[in-house]
View (cartoon, one colour):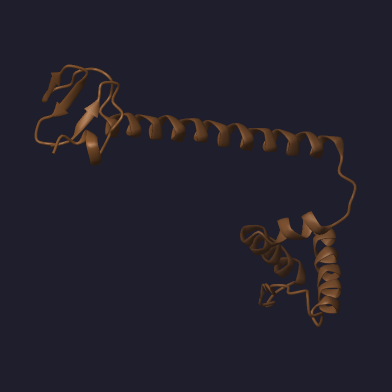
Length: 145
């Protein structure tokens, strides 16, 4: 807990120097804790609030302390899990979009409510001609109008 308060104090010192600069803009985030009992209780409450708001993570990210091998392994595992989750989500979204695109184009086979004419087919009620392979030709010379 002392390292967190020390890092917070160092952060405030370095950020107060950079506030006046024209190119540097820092967002000020503050946590207020009312000290009614002992100082230890107030510090514990402050650390819980910092952890829940994400400020502790920002301070730890900025601190230049030695990262142990176990911390490196944990961070590497978290990054790998995040990357795998992202790839899975991308795969799922891609397959959903492809399915939607196939449904919009009409697919390749003869479906319900369609009549096949030579190399083309016409969707009943739709009024548009489609190429045999399901690629829409909307409007113009292929519309049959």
